Length: 192
Image (cartoon, one colour):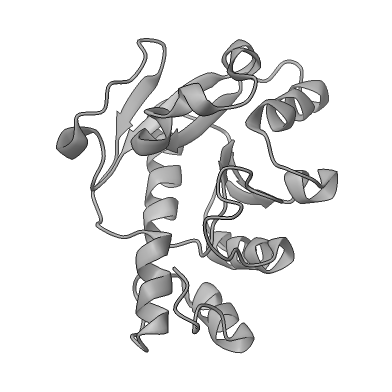
């Protein structure tokens, strides 16, 4: 389970998901779109959940083992990893679950709601990226598995800023994601 706001999803997300899938030999990685990302609410404008889900669906087309998931959107309300993992465990009790996140998020995992439930239900996997472990020297808990992924210096914040500046993102986001951004006029107001 690779949860996130995905506002928008970009090649960095896909590289990380594919690398973790391959390194751990996972059957599939669910890119779970947050309904209401409680840690980001009030910090910036967030694109509506159905549009973010459409972008993740477009981003994962043709990528074996990567799937979009609307689990948190269907549940509604604030999105908590503990709830998502509990639901996945209930549906797939024999499955080994992994909670995948960037090392920057893992470094602040102590701020998460019901972290003990997350740890009891899944193996936490942190991937490093530009601005990640090597550069920031994040102190991660010993029970967090770390995987290095090819570095690409890109973030959703960067994509939103580029759109607001009128710059293209043709190689930074899959074509389907670019089409949705353009069709919906997303991120033009400059609120990264």
